[in-house]
Length: 241
Image (tube, rainbow, N blue to C red; front, side):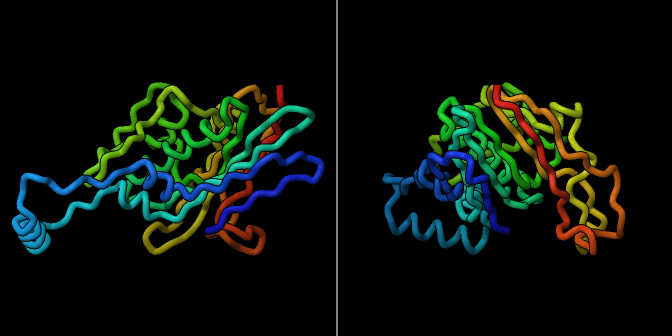
């Protein structure tokens, strides 16, 4: 799925950043060097035998590097005040929570880096539920995500900053996240109905209102005649303080 952003012509656009998160992860990673105290032929033999008789253990960091998902961040000016707005579509890898933990944490910390102390908003389809460890790691200061993995084949210079956390617009305004933002039917997950989409923010911003969402679906599955997507549209109005 693609990402896109649009702003009114009345807003001043200062910069656009587009970061392929997998490439960024690769840039902060270094593959383990071959052990120097093992002769090359012995090492090659060991690797061959291991590949034949031992099931390989996948490295979630390698999987995270291979994902094509892109973070888009605009730096704009509204009434003389700077604001960064980002959007991201998280990898949909429910069976690999460690990969999702990597991407969600890296994207959060990248937004703090790109905004450089300015207020920012980060929205998108995060493919995580509010009860998940990824959501808690994004919104709770000091929370350590138990799914955040140690690398197997790489030296990684990155560590999550658990002091940098986000607020959710819907939770700030309504006290809770919506009942659902996605309703779909697939053979592996019939009648899936949950909240996966969020508008996060950080800084001197006040949520004035959020788009009201229904409490329950109105058909067997989305999309349908009145819902062009399996996801509901979410929206929030902010005041810059």
